[in-house]
Image (cartoon, rainbow, N blue to C red; front, side, top):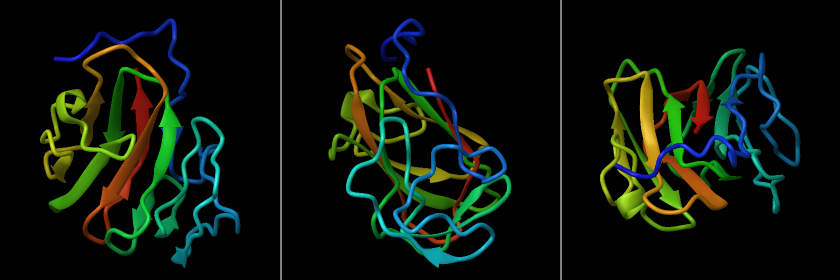
Length: 156
């Protein structure tokens, strides 16, 4: 299902969400490590960078959302496939949108066509598998329940 990974044109690096290895989390007011905090969303993010959830707690190895929904982590990427390392011990619902819409045929194997998924059999989830030509896309990930944890996003 979907196009093959386009390694020659891949422009998005693996993104770690914990502050121990993160280089791509951006918030206008800065990031408060190991603290619950409400984050502002930047008007413009550099390519391949991501904001923390509107309410989250960045830890050494992972990012934990502390409230459901609200403004969502949104970043731009150029990749055929996007996977998330989301190591949940309890079921948590989430939604993925591409360019503001449900991914439809570009959904990963762990999503429904409407972009809805559930963290339950992790830790790795294929979120996007573009069905057509690889181009720059905006990806939005919304955790629909509090306390969802995310370690990294990988791109291929």
